[in-house]
Length: 410
Ligand code: PLP
Image 1 (cartoon, protein in one colour):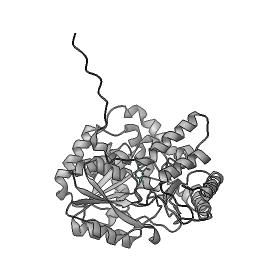
Image 2 (cartoon, protein in one colour):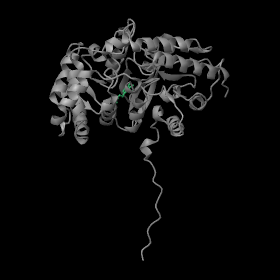
Image 3 (cartoon, protein in one colour):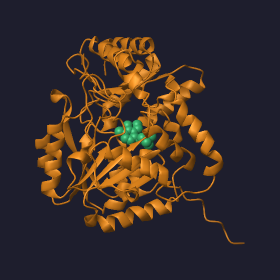
Image 4 (cartoon, protein in one colour):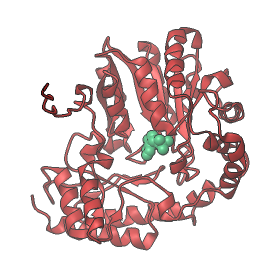
């Protein structure tokens, strides 16, 4: 009788060795365990508007439901034509010229498209400049694609703007692309034109691809203005990423797009690569593709939320006030997006391991935030809160975080 081989341990691929996404990391597992035990956890960890009562604009739901009968089959792998046309027309009004429906790829959220764009681009050892702090999918996707993420500094002392000298110093022969997240997650910074022009200039001088993650482009406060990176770089290849998850509050529908702009004749091979990857995953969720034209045209209800008196505006203010009232905590006031990224002065509260800090906060206060190192920040002295809960909940939670910091010793 032949013996069966003992079952070998199933090991994860070595390709994941440097891949890390702490927003949904081990601390979230602990939060789920506590919830299973019956505890109520206030989740300030994920930028997911709907559970906080931010419902999608009616017309988006309406048009998606109406499209269901006709959306049962696969679409073209780049997406339905009407949605891609709407994306092109939207960007034409925002100063990006020379783009066509063939330059638009619809995806299951921006997340899928970020991974595709990097998988199509990178050979082992190629470098990509990624902001620090960053939205960690970018770092993870570069690593997963065999590339090396090289972090450039965003300067807290200068409203978290990218440090152009640091970027310049980190460009090497292996640098292929530079990632710009504007408005920024986690810092809430919105970049002025001279900073964006400085980045474009570096990309121009060194032949780099621009990767512009602009998913928060409509979530702006005070006098902030969003300038699409591609509008400043008609002579450079640029991929602009955006979608419906944030400004249109339908993160669960998984609807995003990427648009290629600039001199595409220099990118024939890359575009072939992107097309292979788009074909391999067949297409994005078709019903939610039908929401894109509805979202981009007409009335933009997000404006009601971000203007003074609007809910997001009030919550941003409340979070900022509460955070900066905590002794030893400072915070650059967010000008966009859905987050604040405060700093804890190590002279007031010395944190050695910030993952342990958020774990201990969860245990003690039943509040879940994300540690700064989860955004590839280089010191254990920051954390991120989302500004999505109602003002009273947010203020109460941050006050409790302050009390916790006051008595916390590692
Ligand atoms: N880019 C940034 C900067 C984000 O903050 C997020 C989500 O939080 C994403 C991309 C992913 O968005 P999507 O829901 O479109 O996959």
